Image 1 (spheres, rainbow, N blue to C red):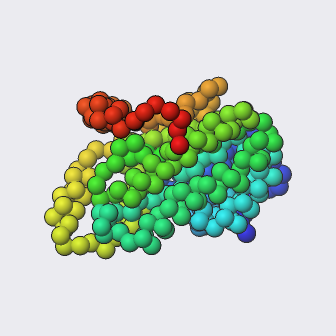
Image 2: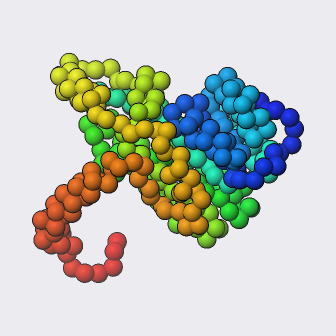
Length: 292
């Protein structure tokens, strides 16, 4: 059952949006939680450790509800979402931020490593969405935000399984947006580029046992990643607020300036390949008729 830590009783009366944020203890989750609170919004902030959120409670009082929740435990997720909704009376923004990256080549990572990654990045996200949707439908409004990545569109070696989790994440939210639009609900995939957050720290990375055959490749790739420049995460809250405050928010939104040139080039290459092979593809259609 979700544990709570609140100051005072009842709901706060200041105007603004009510957020439910996972992974609120560090990185983007922490920055956006504090930024929302600083602009007068209310936040149900969740993390695996309640102690990691204690200073939020001391600073923001009744505007924040801190909940201990592990997204891989569906019962905890259901309880936390229900508790947050009951406490504040509504949820306007449900932001799925919890996740981590698995470092290892496709050959190196074990099936157990990949399952654990998906338990957090995919099934944890689904648990939050499925717990929140009945409440959002009953309200007649709500905005589900999934923190994806540019790596949900273009993959890189050595973190291929993390990329695969974000490709699945993208497809799920893409379908979800169409399914819940008739209920007056919105979905946005926020796709950050590289940022100087704690996501690259040992707390957010898990490493598969390395094989000697990939040692040189791994060292070179990791060194290039360390040398690359990341954006300033403290510059991101206004962009996030522009998305959540929009009457018609976008389904996909690049966070930062890095992704658009990168994805534009990758999609141009894909289109060129498909076009080059179009005669072979078309011939494989065979006789026109009903699909089987």
